Length: 311
Image (cartoon, rainbow, N blue to C red):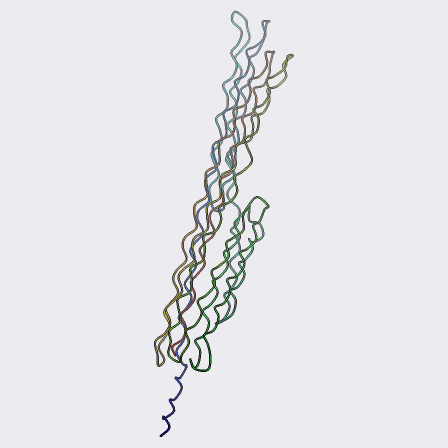
């Protein structure tokens, strides 16, 4: 007697919603500007005036969302010559505060459907300063075979490509992991999707500039201090885990995991101090170097996949 055919399972469960991506990390604060150079003493003559102190360096520009650094202190004024009618030099002006950080990066690309390839990561949005490219989405899990005797398991989707960095010195986001293949058989459960890799950290800034040269004779101003190093960008947060598969007979899929938070940007290095002014009647002290910019905040983590619908 032939076996009684088995009715196919109804496919009516809804997949769970994808997890929300983590927030981007705060940008690092800009470093303080270097102090201005001290003004030189006045020449040995009547009515000689000491040199004015140098202007303090400007604060560094904040990273994405970060505050600007404070300005450096002005240099001290030069002393008047002993036994003369001259006066002391005036103190230097304090440096300007750093500017606020620029706008954030663009969002990640969407995920593919079941069995498809993961979406590509989004490129940084316009106006971003050296932000990391967005991480790509994980490949989705392939559908299970309808019948183990007739059909094999489906192949998992490929992970998408990482987003491009905004500058040549900034690394792009890491590609997502491929999804697991579906199990053969009518009621087999699919494997969970893999987590996305962490984003690469940004490259270090250029080396510090050379100190300003010493002032020459005849009251020439001192050289400017070198530029400080730029801070290192924080790494991107990890992707959220995939939601669990739905149970049989109209079970709903589990919700996707939340993405990890982005790393914080590094603090910029301090600017160099200005060189001392040359001897003369009213020479000017060198200007302090500007503080280094704060590192960009890390990119927010990629949201997890929604769970598969019940079988």
